[in-house]
Image (cartoon, rainbow, N blue to C red; front, side, top):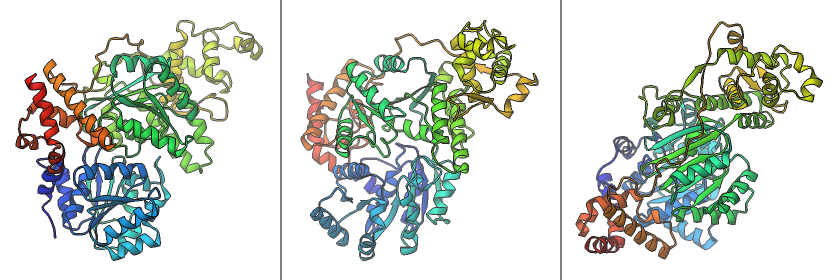
Length: 602
């Protein structure tokens, strides 16, 4: 028997009404339609299948790529009183059989399974005997062979439409450019699916990119000046850098944990659990960490190395600020990052077309880093949103970069690359331009070139910035087989011939300390409100520790802040706060009302 979606939204999840696109998706699925749902992280796409699964008869089957993600989602649903479970290899045989029986007897609203398990003959036979309410394919971008999270098992999920043609299917993701969207629908054989595409904008995230000078000291300044007491993620390109950075941060007094594929499964799980349950834990990780992380109060994502693509950057930075509160995406990068990534692309063993696509993705990422206009505009345009106004919440909006006519400097740099044979990296080229008196330069005869010493008027940092931006603008490319040697491209000809002018960013001087620090509960206006917020956090932490769950599964920070604003004194008033459903009101209401009373009456 069907139940009313709006009633479930309020009674189970504690929200008064759907967001506009959520309502459209839910209505479409309730009518039996297939859907492609693109919503940014934190945009509420899970409710698009959770509510219909509960409202329709039968059990909603959710395809999810990671065991840890399934466990966390099920635990959060159970906290809200939803009959949810997951089947995966981490369960004992008896546990799995009990869940299978609940599926067959219709006792589950939602069942999460990995694609590999879903496709087994046993699971297919169970589903034939059960009553699927819908199939939700989460992280659907994993179907794209051009994506950074490609999972070959996802390619076989088209079988769901063939086996259960009358059961609605949803493909959901937060990351898909127009090409990937069409690939998802094609490979899942969902040609008639309605497309529900929300804005990719995450207005609460502040985007910042700066040139890499001393990455550790830059990170230290960012953390100390802005992120004391906050949870965050620091991404590095290599396992060794992850380990070294985590150890260094620990030595600086931060609770930092490493995460990468070289650690044991038990250690990765232990570190992830600590990150999810802690208020001020920093996870230092490779891209092996993060897909589907539900922790809502990640206040920053920092990149110490250049991401491979704008899709990867968007997805990784999207793990910050899922609760809608202010968050930071902070990135430092330099030319050495480009050299390393180009070498990795060319040595990957991929075919020529794949390498071409990866090179283009890297060039798009470089272009984003060297922007002089709004970063959010460029990021959203990459995903097809071309009419977004300047955001006012990125570094280029808040502190517009200075630019300069770099035509003459660029011609000198390009000429130096050509006259030295396109066989040398930036350090040697800068030495030649500055007229360095070095034995190696004399041995090579580069002190007799017309470009020797013609750049004495600029310092080393300025010249390195010019070369970095020439690569980003596509006028130079990195030879992956030449230890970072720079080579000219066809695009540089108009500049060399004097047919066009070139404007570049003027690299900023390092920022002095003192920028406003972002704290949990930011936005609270007075000391009494901060005191109440901290009392509610302490109450939440205690209740979470008693159950062995992360604090956010009790209530999000945003819900606590609404409690601070409303100061409810009765259960009825507390029930009106967003995020307080009937199950949580019954389970936790008295505890939080008492915490509020203690602060107000003290």
